[in-house]
Structures are given as structure tokens and as C-alpha cells.
Image (cartoon, rainbow, N blue to C red):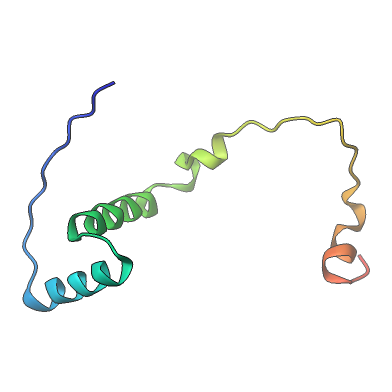
Length: 80
């Protein structure tokens, strides 16, 4: 499958651009890569949790028997 990239253009004031450039340099990324990552993060933050792919994973059974009745005690050293 061939993906067609779209070019997006915007304007930043001097301070925004300077900070973007600094962050990019610290992360070892180009400004383009930094903006792409920021865009993906922003989009993911806007999606309702129900649309998050992690919630669409079907549970899988295993042959391991578990007992969660003492989970709090084991994790937090508390009596349940």
C-alpha cells in the first residue's frame, strides 16, 4: 500500500519557533520530525478512550490458573 503524504503549513511567532528548534535539537530530531510527533500525540489525546486500540484487544485465555483474591495483599502488603 502506497501512502501519500500531505504537506501542512503554519506560522509560528519567533518565541514558538525558537522553543521548537531547541526541543528538536535536544531530542536529536529535525523540526519536521518534532512537529509530526507532536501532531500524532495531539490527535491521540483528542480521541475518546473508546476509540483507543488498546480497548479493542480481545482477551486471550491461557493455561495458567490464577487467583486474584490476594492481589492487594501481594502488591501493597495489605490485608484485603
